[in-house]
Every structure is written in C-alpha cells, then in structure tokens.
Length: 121
Image 1 (cartoon, rainbow, N blue to C red):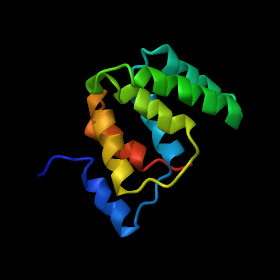
Image 2 (tube, one colour):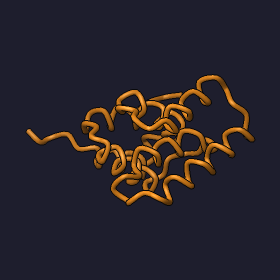
Image 3 (cartoon, helix red, strand yellow):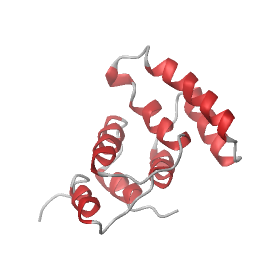
Image 4 (cartoon, rainbow, N blue to C red):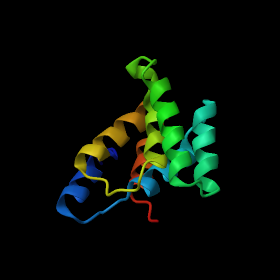
C-alpha cells in the first residue's frame, strides 16, 4: 500500500479532472492551520464578513510588507492567507505546488492538503 501524497493531486489538476479555485482551497487549508499571526486572523475575519476589494487590497499590501521582512521558512502561513484575500482564480499545477509546499511547512497532513485541494465552493 502506498502512502497518500498531496503531489498526486497535481495530476488531477493537469488532466482537468479537478478544477479547484484559490479561495476554496485557501479557506479549506485555513481550517487546519494553527493561526498564530494577527494578520492571518485579520484576513479570515475580512473574508468571513465579506470585506470589499479596497479593504482586501490594503490588507494584502500590509501582509506583503510583513512577508518581505521574514525569512522564507517563516512566510508560508502568511502566503496562504494572501491566497485567501486576493481575487479568486483557478488553481493550476504551479499554484497547487506552492499551496502544497506552504501547507506542509505549516505542518498540515497530506490528507488535510488533499481534502483542501478537493474543496468545492
């Protein structure tokens, strides 16, 4: 029996069998994250209350400002939050690889990541 691996989902995306959307995946991943950063909580709150584009853009700029000051190994949680508040878009193979990497860096299980990539809006 082979171990489950989130990388296998990329093939589903490439073949067109799976068409995840960035907001659905990012929101699903946030269910499994241990949110410790105030900006991540702020992003979740903004999305949940239906913040408008101008507010989300301002929040994105603030989060990017913080990301730019962090070491790469410390950026993954905030990068996942950026995916939550930027405009919704299809998840292609490249974005899927980043989402998987960032989720793994946050300590999510392979099953959590797979479930998030299969999340529907």
